[in-house]
Length: 640
Image (tube, rainbow, N blue to C red; front, side):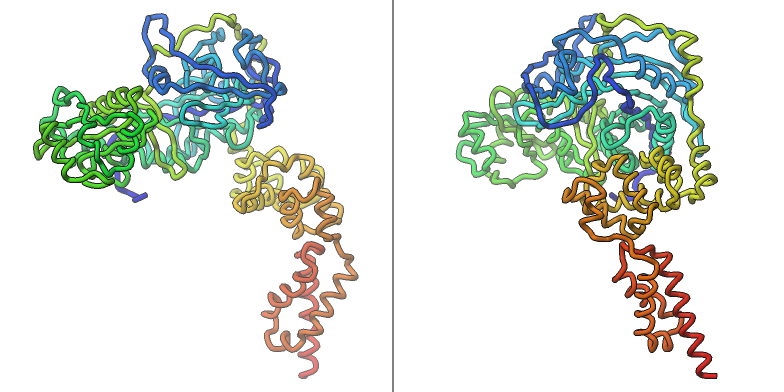
């Protein structure tokens, strides 16, 4: 991505963060099941979800958009993690009070105003991620503030809600979900929109994540925390980017979305200069006959399958669909994203034709039937009769939105830090009261109980690591952010292994193994304790640790002891180590006499190639250095 293309202050960039964090509870939010992720299923069932009217008789636009896709939903479940509640065949059970307490602790840590009673609401969601067609959510607190390194960010709301089902497979005509994650308790924290650079927004998310970890009440690991970002610029509508799982993507997404929105506003300004109005956009025409002998494979295949071809005239849009004010920002691309949700391959437009097998003769015929002038553009869409008209209406709406600049929509992140269209933004019609769950009062006794569990600021915890364990600030932050902070404290208290080595292993070593393609999540607490106990008891050296972990992660052994045995890296005795060092030094006297102390690194490599994994590197270094000094002294004395 090209940097510094946008002056964020001048465009009025505002970003509001919404953090969805799973809570570490023993049971789910509305039943007694545990979260147990597995792709081994005991039963399945199929549903088709439909939108319902709100109490005001309105239909939510996001729900209608999902419904028009016409997808069936297949749900899979394991009886260890799902029951009749998740299947929507039984009313929800009593609210999980452990989850309530955790949400209240988070609210107090953010200085928020806790409500007097908890009232459960239903939020319409019919993309299949919930069997009921809605998600249950509860407002826990209002207001408050988050303190970051440089500023104080206002908090809007704190909610307790149920997580969605886990998407398993997404086919053309149906989706498959697993129910293991459905109904897992989440705390949702909505921060007020603030100005700032993409890097500053990411710093805010990091600070909030650290506060949540400090409570020791939240789940850890990929997928347990998701960020939604509401982004807007001056003159444009708010765009929500949903489901960002990786912290380091936030700054990239904000940067791209600011650039995309600025580009859309420039396109809007150009259309205004040309005097284009919404009423100038005509209805589509059936132009199938023009393409009956086409060489375009996509269109030919559609017609052979009894599909049709529609064309839409866009008055005054010449050059606009392919215009790219910033990298990867084009109106034609925006339209194509929407069309794909209707199962269609994409669009053809006049700014990219002739091409794709569409010839000049066909283009001239189109221009004639559509009455296209030099200032106009057109869009071609091919598909089946059951969905092509809905897709074309979506194109028309998106083109009209271009005259307003930035449309009010929901987008999703891409792995490289860009965004893609998901659906329109939901409206107020999606919320209504839950009738199956009674209100729960928040008593003084409950608040007094949990006030004792409100954590210290995370900055104090990091400082504690520095002072108590002798870690650098950088390593202390890595441990705190890693998800292994409690494990680090336990290992440091139960072994005599150097705390900095424990911390580096739980952060840097595991990151290196993960980048090498190993799933480090399979190492549990007992495995780590066995590993560091082996070092503490002198059974293996610190240098052997990466080798042991690699063998274990390859699945070649069942436990750490077997990994050590397989590698044959039992620690050698001091006498044996001394003999190995002495032999190498004696064989290298000429090198020592020539290079002196500079021979150390060469000889260290020779020794470690023999004893690696069986002797402590620091001990080898001390021993070798002493032997080299002795040889140099002997040499000096002989010269005298």
